[in-house]
Length: 439
Image (cartoon, rainbow, N blue to C red):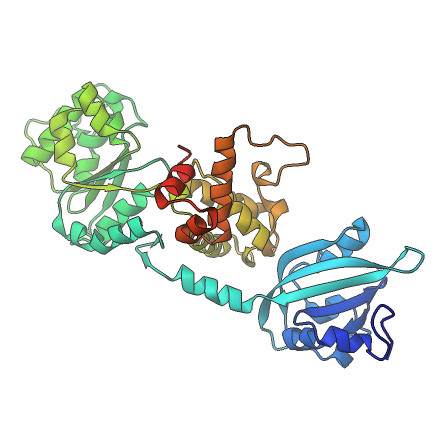
């Protein structure tokens, strides 16, 4: 057995490799395996005698053998590849998630003679992640955030009450998801869930959309058209962007809530309204009431129960759960075998500020699915704006920005555990919350 010249005489190289906890193997320039340590045997389920002399592709059957081979990339570039998340397929058919690093091997003359690759079994990490992902979910809402967990605890009671609910929060925080959950958890779950965006239509079209019209009510009204209040009978009517309602329609919505009736355009008699109303907005309705642009009486009619959904940047602990959820769903939609995101991609996603909230995260992963063929989503699959800045890119422009970035990175390092981040940075919870909010 060969000796390692830089180690004491009498210690064979294979003994050294076998003492390493990670899998290690080397290849020559024809991709044939020349050494294979004990950990590599355990992780792959392939013995050293079976592996040596065969190509690495024949042994590993990995998710990157068809194109993005880490060993090939390092030999072509001359630079090491570090911590690339992939999966391999064992002889028994079991897929094993691993993290690989590869580097070229050079002879005494400096020319490449092959490559060395180390790999680590990530099965335990993935199982731990799965346990965290299953921490709490209700009606397609997945969270570990304490504010949202508190909401989920009372959501069934709110749903059962039948009272109007006002959902507040930035765009993309999941207001319609909560509205659907309220519907599905209520006695009206077998009735229709009807949504209308109050900011998407001009006033005249929105009125007919909400209340409907009778034949002959206006030119081209050749037949009756039921409005959303009629279509939602026995179910739930979701008024999205209710803060964009014109004043004239605010009066009519108020009448529906007060009298439980509405009049289609051109109708001779009112119709009974039998729909529970859930409203949502990303605007500050209280300020609009004070300014006179939103009716105070309507505000209090809608605001029997108020739920304010926090932005995603205030609950980074939910990002791994949401990533896993969207990856599973997109895999079913696309038919691709995507196992998840790599460790470096997760680090980037944890540090992002998500001005578009959960919807932005979903769009990022949908984009990545277009480029990722199989295995784990890598940095190169992400939108350009998320890829690490090139050398010489702009640095933080102020001390406050440096503090904010340090806070985000600390939370990411501790997998969303804010108290751990506070201890590392030596700051209070209130200070950390202010930095994460950008204030």
